[in-house]
Length: 303
Ligand code: ADP
Image (tube, rainbow, N blue to C red; front, side, top):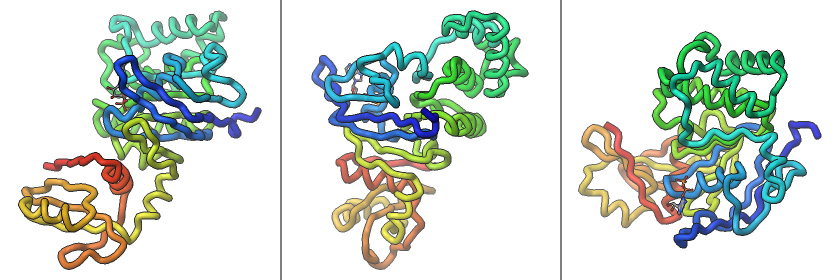
């Protein structure tokens, strides 16, 4: 099968932990080749879904196929074409990047020395770590570490790459470099990026889903979702004490503290009255609209 037609098909997946927490409720998604964003607050179920897709956990119900591979029934087949970058991964701090990558390539079964050398060099170049290949990974910055994690997960050319909350702790420059690297890889494989950071999604993902309390609230293209909100998002800057009244009168989707004032975004199909101005919606508005109507109140503070 041509890689560009590959599809990850997730159907009716549910998962309840032994403590009774239902982490996933009947989740269905079709994920095509490209970079796919899974966005949701902490505790939404993202990591549980990522671990299931990575064959580290099995769902209680439902099916998952990558092309013809049944992920639940044939985990070993999937593992041959899977790259997984978990939220936290340990590295041997005293090893040099090149040696460590070589070691992982052996573990992945690339036994031919010359072929391995080639793979290691290619991956170091791709992740922009070639210049620092002789350095110990213990001294890497957060961004270098994450890119090294990607280098490891790319050994063997996976068709499915799972990346769980990868930008936490990266500075803005590192974050952009890291996301650009992923989006390049997304030209040929399926990449799922799980995150609670809206900006991670808006820039590079071709498709996305919003997940909350174990359920998918929205499955869309980021630009399409923003377009649908046009003309319906209004802003007003108010004193904090007016907020409770606004909450009663309007569908408030987010409030941000800015310079001692409160910036309120509301959803309304009509002009909500004086003091409000229409604004161009962004993905954060899409996200908060969905999450708010799902019963969670989130507040963001800007200094
Ligand atoms: P996210 O990655 O979106 O933060 P998780 O998948 O980690 O969400 O968690 C979803 C829910 O499942 C949370 O309520 C969390 O406390 C619970 N949970 C996660 N892992 C376990 C576990 N191993 N045992 C019990 N509950 C868990």
